[in-house]
Image (cartoon, rainbow, N blue to C red; front, side, top):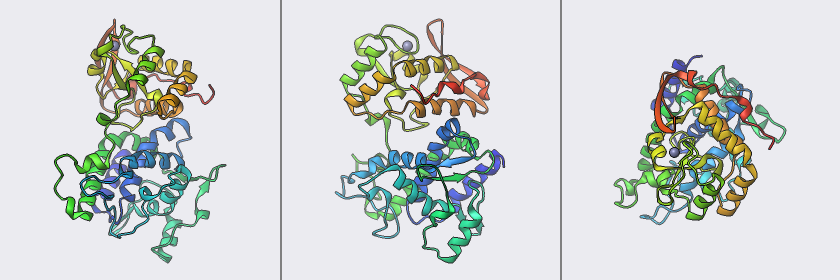
Length: 356
Ligand SMILES: [Zn+2]
């Protein structure tokens, strides 16, 4: 199976697939979000549903509150009381992983004339089970589980690599469908409130996440008051916080994915990937300061995930195709460089180390 087949399959699921709750969009979105980490840290042949569960929890965080103009949550499905993930108070990755695996996972590949068999392998068994009872959960015995009892899904061929490549293309389409569905199920918010757009309620937005001054101060101290990319001394007012792996690629607010930079570098980098050399610099920084970064995370209530953060860069760069603009620093000056595919990144898998 190639990239074309996968893209075609995704397009069919997006355009023709039935949708009775937002679970479907949440699941697709979360599979795309976790594919890079799985690819960099696993064997590429299976998908750890706990990673998917963690992504799903990240994705629904904004929806755990009420939609202000209505003073209640927005309806996310055709049934008034569907057991939606984000109405639960106990959002733990393992539980969410099982919910997603047993309910929407087998169903999202259904289109009116059958199945789109592009994403996973275990469908024949699941099909038989679903045929018996459309409302049933998929029995746990049909999943392989890891040592922690978390379901793992066997992936087709190079599905994970292809999902990483397609992610920036497909995620915005999923968000459009998700928003359309929510509008359909909540007629009274068909027109956006002037202060509260549905997008702002549904999807995390990096613009709203600004680090508190004390957290920025601690990160600056860790970097010896210098821009991590060009090494220039940071003048107080011009310091900016940069998501190393861009927010447009993954919603990663982990302290390891945040660096302070000068305004110059930040504006040139924008939402681009970084060069292999800068990637090395960042990995060294993360590996050298694991303890310090953990304390900063603890003190300022930020998530921490050194392996996942580094894994994201590895996967995105090793699966890059076509002409890519990426960010680099040459003789102390921020520049944009161009490369074809992954040729620009001799990135080393050993950067991702599970040992401190
Ligand atoms: Zn700089």
